Image (cartoon, rainbow, N blue to C red; front, side, top):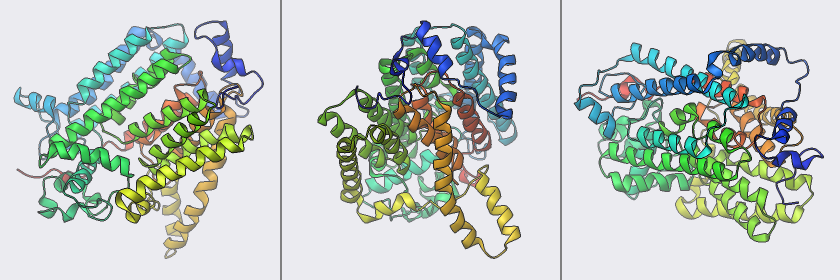
Amino acid sequence: MPRGTTTRGQDVAAADVTPGGPADTQATKLAEPPIPGGRVEALMGVLIRALKSSPLSRPLPAVSVTALGLGLIVFTGLCATAPGASAATLPVLLPLSALARRLGAPLLYPDPTNVIMYAGIILCTLGLAGMLWANSLGWRPSPRRVFWSATAVVALVVNITPVGTSDPASYATYGRIAALGRNPYTFLPTYLPGGIHNPYTALIDPRWRTTPSVYGPIATWTQLAAALVGGNKPWLTIWILMIMTGAAFVAAGYLLLRFAADPVRAGLIWVANPLLIYLLVMGAQLEVFLALAGIAAIMISRRGTTVWHDLAVGALIGVTGAIQINAIFVALGIAVPLIRERDWARLLRTGAIAAVVTFGLYFFSYGVSSLKAPFSASDRVISPSFWWLYQIVAHHVYPGHDAAVNTLMSVLWGPLLLALAWYLYNRLSPDVPAVLAATCALTFAWVLVAPWSLPWYTAVAWVTLALLPRNSLTRWLTLATIVPALAHFSAGHPDNHPTP
């Protein structure tokens, strides 16, 4: 049996059934085991059954709601880009946004922008749910049509000003620092000529202007490539970053189209997912590159048994680790079936290559400073994380002991993550591939338990979920994405919008 195709039960064949046939129906049933004592699960099931019997579960209404939701977010990117406008977008004009401005697009300010964004995100979620329900009821659109339609949408939105995050401004600035021959792991954005008035630095959320890069060297190289094209024009650098991100997003979708047992469901969950198009592509998030390299490593690990396959998997894990530190969960997910099979030789070989590649990329690119960078943000806490509530309560109950409170948090959240991952892992059918179940469970648990978590951190969980049969984790991952998405769609403080 090929390494990585190992399932968690006895019926291995159930994981590789032909989509749409009787075996697929059986696999779907196996993938939705009853959850003992789950009152919240039961309540959500009632709500889902009610919505599933509504017109939303038909293809045309579902696709229409999806288009409307994404259209509202695109409208925000076209209109709220001028100095003094809403903080939902960066104050830069990418090609389509510039064209809309020349054609007299209305300028949106905070209050109407917030209403439009809330409505757009909610409609995107309902549209995604409707398309998946329609698929479960027998809607089987052509996978290629789904892929190319979504690709056309991605090709459109990469030309629109980023919406919902200021991260592209930080990425562009780190790229600019590297393009000037400086080390982005030690050279702060405020050190650029002109300080906070530098055209790059001025775009960054004020909270991050004195923060060095916390990303891996491969992430820095993508930023450097964009900055070499953009030069002293931040909008051009950001545009190149958008195009690169969109291409990586589509590439991951293509891999799913080629290798998923059910390419229709995989396409709807990833490349045609309006929430992910908004969060990952319109935000130019690095998590897209992580998801692409991670899913490539997982697919090779499932299909290959030779030394060369192991070396390729190890190299790809090393690449993911050189993008962001949370790639460790991809590595652990790939290790699970090897540990279950007691295949210590392959585990050692793959792990050694991954470690050498990761360390080499960090150390021989920007030195020791880059090795420290991924851990520099480990003490940050964000709402609505429950650690944020924990800090507030502890601060009032034990005033003056903030350091001890934070130390306890740093000790607790790792074991809690592993415990939750084990629980989620066991909620999935024992007949799904162990590598997919483990990676999805680990990355999902990290999103829920980590003190600092944002909606685009769900990318790897989504791309692995796309390869699994229908299961109840889909609804929970959707909630884990939409809640922080509704709470965090700011591209920075209003001060981030410079005056003319």
